[in-house]
Image 1 (cartoon, one colour):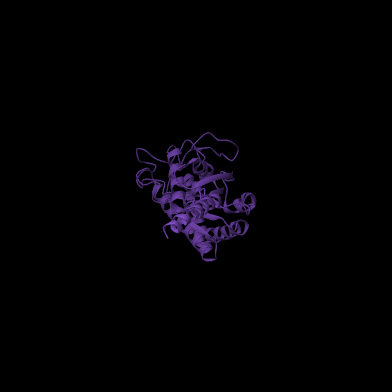
Image 2: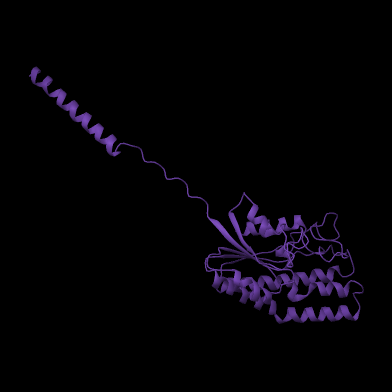
Length: 274
């Protein structure tokens, strides 16, 4: 028996060695390797809108639309701490109305676009005209006429309706895109000049129209997020020591337009909406 037992041990050891070699050869005993993490998705951005989106007054103008590299879409492209954003096109142009965006900027959005930002509406209401008419004399006939016209535009609801149509058109052209709509900050410390509160109230009413347009588009299926900046400049309005808006009425290029710091606030608002 002892001789038989000893004669079988080499055979068992040989089988074990063969199994071990096979395991190494075919990887059966090798630990599973974790898949490398997927890179974060890159948002492909097209930025639409008026002078606020173009960056007028915040940096050196690049073209006739007064775009600048200080504009918040460029800041979104350059940021590193949030989602990866690749600015495909800055289509925004100073002076643009909602109709202008629909006619001349919308074609730059396509099915490959995954993020659209838009700031528009101030030129539809003509807030600058209200300021120009009411600052010299808030009780003058030109001021009264400008206020009546602005009130009629607001009362018609046309800004909200037109914006809804624009947002739905964006969603149709870019079905995978998230659309972030921003509005306008209340510009003045109320007591800073005779027409300050008049312009502030008109801005608030405009922001309400923008909110209504964005809400309506979202209710109709567009992937729209509304990010309000109405009170984002509190403590940094025109009339404060460190305004985030151009404060010199003698400089129409910068007046009531976001400074570089103001554009950074817009960029932060967009990131917060994503």
